[in-house]
Length: 134
Image 1 (tube, rainbow, N blue to C red):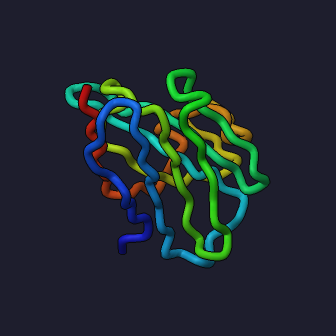
Image 2: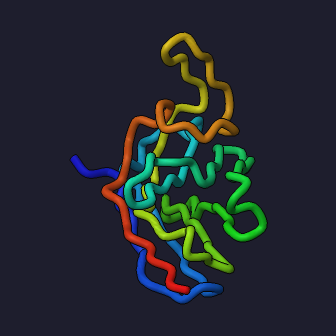
Image 3: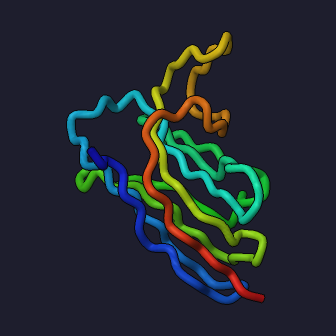
């Protein structure tokens, strides 16, 4: 069944802001997880944007540092991606995802949420479109 649902996408002009939300319907999920945001520009591969672990540690792609902020409302079980100073190159479908804080995948051991790679994330939302015009 659907567990992660994104919302908040839309069209904005360059320099504008949007806040994406990801609602997790699984309220029994362990706190030892990585909550991530990824994006897939048209015709390109999906790439990591930001991640947040259960202790509040964050990780960001270089391209969005100082512009995007990931956060979570623990009461509502919703996490957010605040996107400021948006650029046309931020145009993409944005996905939220959840993966285990510790994972062993294809011979690689992952500890923590610093590596923004799709392979360590198991549950994905359906995506929300963000379009930034110049």
